[in-house]
Length: 105
Image (cartoon, rainbow, N blue to C red):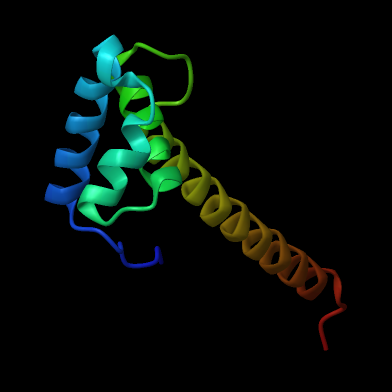
């Protein structure tokens, strides 16, 4: 289970939008993340990570999008469950095979 989010989604979206807009303008680009982070009470590194992920999601930067990461996590979870089920079935088949090999009384 994922940890609860420290910042609400609305604040995260607003801060990301403000930072992306500020980084586009050469006059406000320098120190934009630090300035906006201080204004909104967000750690600048956290804001930087949000901006990078937003740029990846928009296709402006290479990387794994949020949708792809979510889908990958679901598939990995499914693979773990299937491997566990296979291990249980192998154990059960070995048990029943041993039962069939015993001489009957």
